[in-house]
Amino acid sequence: MLIKSAVFEISNSDVAKCPKERIPEYAFIGRSNVGKSSLINMLTNHKKLAKTSGTPGKTQLINHFKINDNWFLVDLPGYGYARVSKKTKRTFQSFIKNYFSQREQLVCSFVLIDSRHTPQKIDLEFMEFLGVNQIPFCIVFTKADKLTPTVLNRNIEAYQKELLDDSWDTFPDYFVTSSTSKDGRDALLNFIDNINTNFDNS
Ligand code: GTP
Ligand code: MG
Image 1: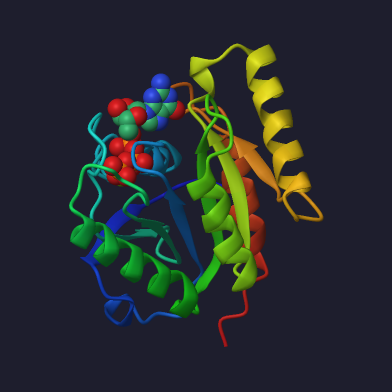
Image 2 (image 1 turned 180 degrees about the horizontal axis):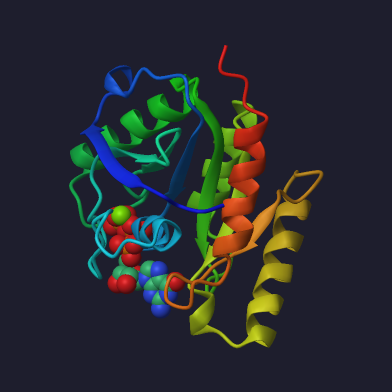
């Protein structure tokens, strides 16, 4: 898919105030610093559409970006960010969960996992939450450029094993990406394009 336009639409912390248009929407979620905002910039070929930072906790709101005038990419705050106060963390958690459980236009979520890390409880719990609420999701293994192909494959296999041992019957569709080398860009955009083509906006 060719990205002809990518435009910031609105930021807020209330799912009720998200755009009303009935167009398909894809959300990026995962721990702080995993690379959600960088992936949005990589997919859209923009350096600064979504704000990124080496310091965790950069994205603090639900951010809608309209792509090619007919679908949305959504950048979200990270879950489990340790350096904000407990109160702020609870506020993040509640509006993120409200977003996922109430947003009807959300057709697929991407749960980002840093490909260098072993499975973390907070990610497994979030996937469990999506599963229980029947919210479709894929996994995206990020920062693949930081590993050799051998270690990368070993980590992905370990992840698959953990999830299959941990009550999941099948492993979700997954992508491997690098926002620096742009690996995974075509695969992700083709996946989205296929869903967009079949989207019923009635
Ligand atoms: P929050 O908004 O804080 O939740 O973080 P985020 O998940 O949006 O992460 P962000 O995109 O801001 O990236 C965090 C850091 O990781 C930045 O320093 C990025 O440059 C770096 N980074 C993100 N993706 C990649 C990648 O694919 N490869 C490498 N080498 N660095 C990456
Ligand atoms: Mg971010």
